[in-house]
Length: 144
Image (tube, rainbow, N blue to C red):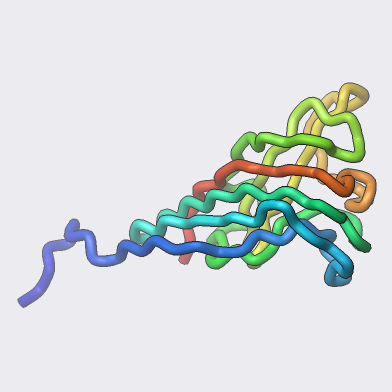
């Protein structure tokens, strides 16, 4: 017996552990107050939710600020699944923070400050977080 073309046969829910970090190298000495992640996968459509708060930022290297540990990769390059993010205690005075999915197990963090005219990737990553930075939001994207 074959299922109809529109039959839902790929549904999944689960949890994941978000990690605030730079793109290289791996962070060291971090600790968290909150580190929650949930996902829902419906066919190729994935929604990731995250709420992560640092209690110590440790050593964060690299050019760009990311959240790693994502259980699915987007099927197109960055800027897919863009969403606004709730943020507190950023190291730079931000007016907005946006998260985008990527073809890796990462969510890229983009920011706007009062001095900028457009959104840009964080650079360097370590300047954008403090010992008590909080990032919370969701990203919806398609996966392969």
